[in-house]
Amino acid sequence: MGIGMEIVYLGFPGAAQLEAEAGVQLLRLARFGALVSTCHLAIEAMRPDHAGPHYDVRLDLITSAHEFRPIAHCSGEDAEAAIRGTFDLAEQELETIAARARTH
Image 1 (cartoon, one colour):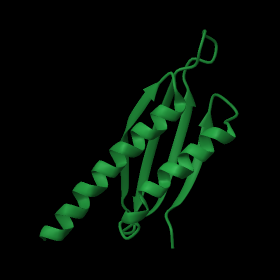
Image 2 (cartoon, rainbow, N blue to C red):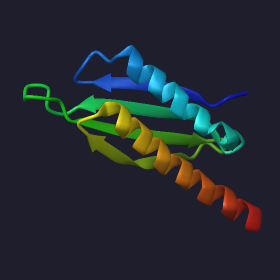
Image 3 (cartoon, rainbow, N blue to C red):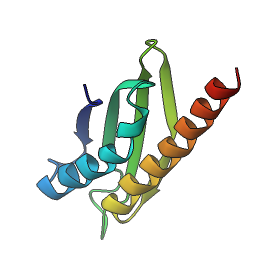
């Protein structure tokens, strides 16, 4: 069974391209399926009234042991880049967890 994902858009209606990017990035975490059961992705437009939005992306992992593991926020003018950044951080976190599990 794969890793589940819930996506929430805050401050804007969302976009199919962002959902597609999140799906592609989730595939990167598939190798950690034994460690992660689901994740929650929040994409927030922080400045909807200014010249251009600034996006804050948050990813929270729920482990197979039902532990909540928040990943550091990524933000920027490009929501897709922020999504990739938060999944980069998640991948690093999961690699660390997997390495610890192998040594114990």
